[in-house]
Length: 478
Image 1 (cartoon, rainbow, N blue to C red):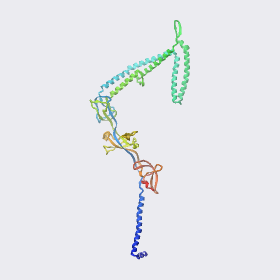
Image 2 (cartoon, rainbow, N blue to C red):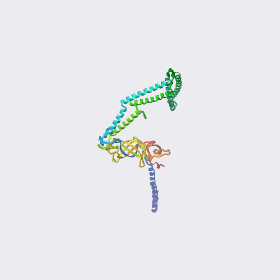
Image 3 (tube, helix red, strand yellow):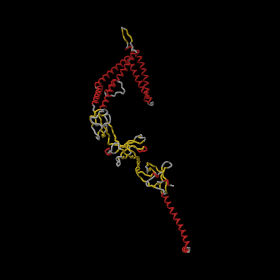
Image 4 (cartoon, rainbow, N blue to C red):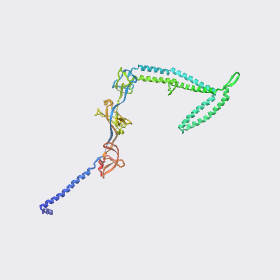
């Protein structure tokens, strides 16, 4: 009441001035309130967030491709001549071993018949019987050579000479084995036994020589002439010639055995110089060559497949060039070329999606089945080369071989993974990653383990759970 009385007693000018003062005071307060509110709102809006969710993450790589078919083969005659028959046309399906075409084989057949006749004569039953007879004769000659030397030097001397030679050979072999394996106790024992036996055999040989000089020579080499007796001991030359005769007879016997064995199903020793075996080898080579030439007058399908093209006709003079082309059209594949930085995604078994340039609205699937270990180089550029088998046949694709395509290769895949936006990640001083998570007490840093990454998201191996909220502009945190 007093305030109203006081204000009513003021002059008009004072009332206006007083009103202006109040307006200025309350207006400033309002201005400060309005100005302060956006600053507070701006501080709150500076931190952006994202909610952690689960999802699938796939790393892919792009490349180019070319349609190819497996089992592609360019077939030709290995001989020249006039084409006498063509049994297929483009588009025909054939099986391995099917006759596709042939040329006049008169000369090749004559060559084969002559080579076959020559080989058969050298390996015929008569040739086998002859070889058996030569083997028997070689055995008799060898036995007689042994008997003669035995008579000249005595059976005892010959026996112990043979035993010493056999033991020395055994000892030499055992020493070689021991050098290769010094810890082999069995071989060491064999060496010890052989050396002991050699000492014994040499002593027995000395006794045999004494017996030879004192008894054997008088029993076998006393001659009588004109009523007189004299001792005709074999000379060193006679004994040496007898030893040479055994060596020659032994070689002939070994050769006869090899020839007979080869004619009765055995193998011819590699590098043999035995005339009979050399002749058989040459005849066999000639027969094989003639067979190859005869086979070269025909074209057979090497595998199951489809005829792609036929470039000959009956009556043509066939040259040694591609006459028929075939391939397995049931298993088309794509030659893939990718940037070398995508090497880690080119893994056998990884799926691919192929879009041919001529069929931009159709996608074909497949799987990588091979990856070159060496980079492919062309025009100074390098790339990874791989192949992928397609799940469709060439008829289903309905495009020519060599059609170009774009290829998407699926690399690493994480299914139902915890995903975090890449902008929420910060590298830690320890080399890992941290994120800032909203908690009941405010924003707090947390270490996380990261798996695969795409351009937008990263897989979280540990450190975050679905539903948590992270800051996506952590650089704004003061």
